[in-house]
Length: 228
Image (cartoon, rainbow, N blue to C red; front, side, top):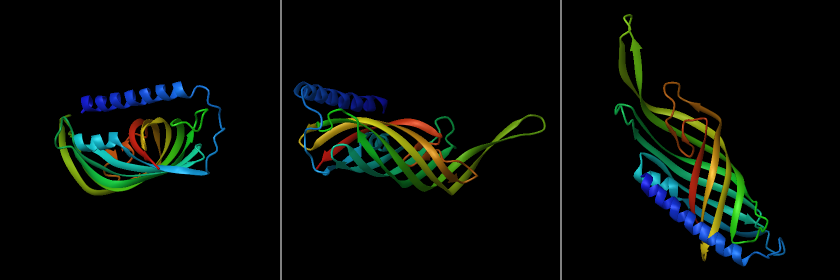
């Protein structure tokens, strides 16, 4: 899995760097904000390649698509939706398992932070609000110690536990037009839980749309985008 992931990342970065270099050579003397564009200047639809790769080749992942509206090449209101799934067995104790599958949603906005807002490549910062409600099955280990200090491990299976999670994301990314309407890009996201509810018996191991059960973390997306 790691070798294939590294290949995808390397090829994508090479394509982006090649496009950035070519565009930079042609755009050195472009004046800023001299191009007149409509208030609504098109929209894009994208799919995340990393989540799809995980879905196909690991025990958890997500199918994710999103759309952004281009407002004057400056502001990009965004909506994202996906379907996350996990079917996990612990590497060292095959009795410890976790299963879930559910949709998730995010809304937010990106902001073009390049000096030349109207170029065919962009760097942007943004924010997202994410939400997921889901059921999950989990088997956990229960360790008991008797009066003589002997430890006994038993396994408890819980089914149809319920959880709801809300979180916030900070986004930074770049994207470049490769050919025609085709755009490739990547973004890095810092995610943090806002609030949640979950079953008291066992916490989720994987949260659709967020990932692991840590309160915060950094993830990356590689996006295949079509512009209109």
